[in-house]
Image 1 (cartoon, rainbow, N blue to C red):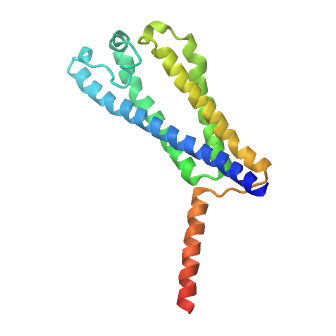
Image 2: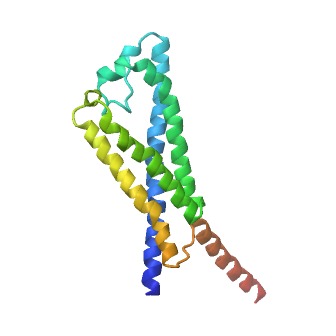
Length: 191
């Protein structure tokens, strides 16, 4: 039972870290896109050509007419949205590799509860006329997957605690590996 308990505990703890890495990549890509595309929009706005530009990151989801009509507001909000997504992304990646198991789980739970779940709660009340055909449901489904994997991954380390298994963090694995090589080198030097 001990090996099976350890394997289960290890799997759920590292599922949490895999979800954090996945979220980090997704949010980094979106954040960088929002941030960089806002500067392209600023250049067109300064030249008085704002109707020539629509945010490529939003085009697959939001209707062009909505983007054009709300261009100034989007232009103002996009860099802040990008910065927020980039912050979430790098926090996710840091948590996946550097945080202890409870802190990594808490980071994922907060992301799932505050970012993804709030989006799932608010989106059904938004008008479907803003979205391209079928995109509101598609975005809702994708965000629901983020909520479910976030909650499962975030609660996973509790299973390790309940099974009374200590699962090393990535940093602890690296330190252990380094220590084993360092102690071998010392043993070779003594002989």
